[in-house]
Image 1 (cartoon, rainbow, N blue to C red):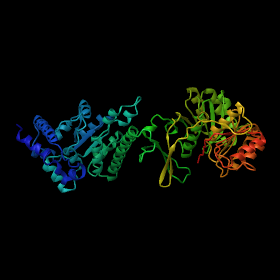
Image 2: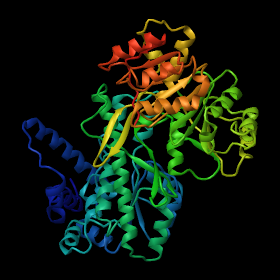
Image 3: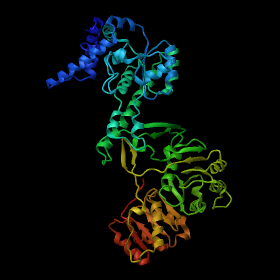
Image 4: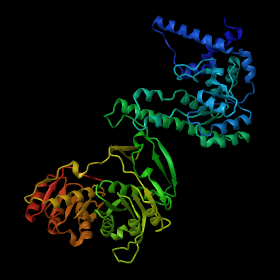
Length: 598
């Protein structure tokens, strides 16, 4: 038989637990259960027998003993998956007079560090059950967290049921993010088991009641919390910041679970009805696009972005801190150069590639890319898709502008997939401010997001390459193999130029480009002005179709001696473009793919 003390405790845990805190749990948290079949009652009875046995085995104290023992007692509840800094925190709290209540592995770690611990089972008088799924989901835990100290009937309820308060709650969650993004993935059942339930419940409860409970989810905050307690401070802003961090921690965790589950249930549908993008602050920026705009840079912590490459995760080896515009320009340069298979150099200014060249000799590619528009290249971003060694680094450091042969070229950023040790050393010597980035190529198939007032646009990333499409000859003149190669190179370049976009290229080298003009004719004229006489016999690529041909862009291009034109086609006046090219003996290729970039 149970002792009288155990019997009293059983009544506390079962019959009255739903009435704690003025019915808080009954009304706010747990929905009432209705059992439809008698067999459930049998199962419940069996479970109750085991609970009674547990209570008997632990010789639970009476309600009066509990109330007495918890009176004025300072308690900290600690349950951690990541145990970084745990021993230091535990010692600090113990020195400040806190009784530490803990679970499982956290309790073992604390005990091994010589810290006295009260197991959570001693508080709940309930065994850990369901393979650890239920440990802290109990009124004796949540009552102690949620009770408002300034509400008399809350404290009376705790006293009546022998529940002590928790003044500090330190929790972090199962490593769901790390598990589902680990190499080789994780099966569905293991993924489900790594979803934390009790942890978020405690975090949310403590964060809600932050006026009375310090909630800590980040080991970086341990020292500040200890100092706060030691100083007897009552700064509510400090508590609110911890509460904000706690809810943000749980929100990011839930977003990862949601993203993962969506992929398990609707794997082929890219656009869910709703989703959350978890962002983590990487740096505060000096300013935004302009000095009067404040700015910051965030890293996307979505599961889809794990090891997916891109400028956001680039390593900065040298130079000034990155600015808002630096990130935009570096992203444009890196995305462009990563498209090319052969050794390539891309020079970008204001997110537009002003020079692109591919060569077996990367030194030659670099020189040609700068030569395409040396005025624009000055102060721009230089990107390579090959390793920067000592020889290339010296060329970057010493190269003079083709415009005058004297001015040493100045760049804001150099970005490449890797650097040799000597190459990095030499490049650092170019300038103290030169930003040197090492980046990983962006994965294909990413979701592209762009903000508009009050909303976001989402689309697939534009991953199509010349190898994915057909360049269909539409004119009488059949293009040569070299002309087709030039057209493909120009077409790949124009994909990265702001619309309306025109690129003129030959021999795997951009000769001139026109970008961002409201009409295509102006972009074409700018491109020809930059290309000069080298445009004769070259390829011209347009990001969209030509709406007019005669006495317009197509005829102007033909008159200037262009050899081949590549455009999507699709205009109601396509036949005019074909007839015009036939008149001037120019090859015309339709790609059936548009590359607008706004």
